[in-house]
Length: 266
Length: 199
Image 1 (cartoon, chains in turn blue, red):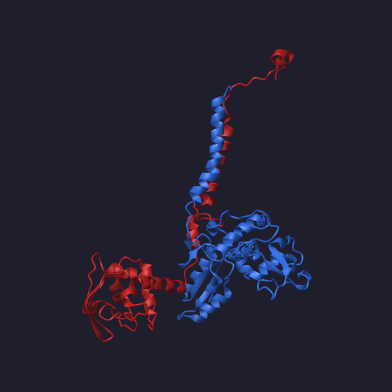
Image 2: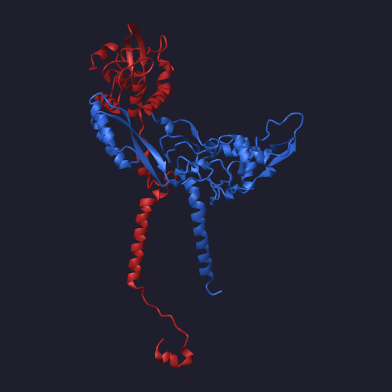
């Protein structure tokens, strides 16, 4: 080969370049990520999932849930809200008059700072609240964007790329009932009439009711219920998957994705 | 291809010649590189692992952190109090006999001004001090000297508004001015000496 060395060199540069970009740089950026704390709190984030939920992640993976569901909430921007916490003693009437004329929600940072200066200048006390905005957040899929810390204990991370179904990063907060999750896995259309989700009936067992009904038996609507004298009980995999789904929550404010929790509102 | 080449079949192979890169290509490339780096600088956060869209830089993310309200300051004050002061003065603010005077109901804590109160954690206290009509002969190190102004202010606000105390808020600026007024080598004082200070 005439240009053997040049070809070898070019191959090294091409492979080395992509290795640097796809492996080395992310490892340097996020490889040392550690458990962190929730904003303005000493509580740890994220918490290790329970054993059952950790097994459920593998059930989630094995059944290809990530083919239709994502676990990543996107955020387009932030909106500030200025909340009056006290009218002060100097001139409470002027403060309340001023507040009634100002726009106090859906502000940019500069607008919020300007409103804060105006109100505090005449003795009022305010707090500034921060909220995440974006299409995903407007749909109720989350309260803030997903960040790398949320996935610290997931092996492998189930980000997903296609949204045939809704995003699941906050499903443990949105549907915190294990029985709801199990009924939905057994017969999605029992919950959403036109659901495109396939029923995962093989994660359940239809069996004859023994001496007494199982406490685990699903409470199904008539249309989806088994024949009289039979009951539907979840197999261990279904219980693990439900535990995993309940453990999916991204509802805590973090430094890298700050917002003011609703509970903080006076 | 020139007319001459067409007529002779032996020389139809095109030949590459050497010529310099046109100057405009160089200029356009450099301008594009420059704009690319400007965009990178404004939007990348310089690969900071904590900066995500919609934030453009670590400075912006820092500036956008929610303003901590009174509740957050109180929580911080409680946290610092319980880790630094509460060991002797007690998490209930009642003090420990023979070791630390109570803070609940203490005239030093509930004073109108804060310079005497702030002086105690900043410089320490040494010798006789009268608290709620009872004399304490004690030695307290400058436990608050190493705390940031905001933390010490949060602690003082916390002790002035807890366990039935209802004195005013202490700001970080108050602590800063007391710290500045003490000079480089603050000495722990006893109660009598402190009474000579402005309140």
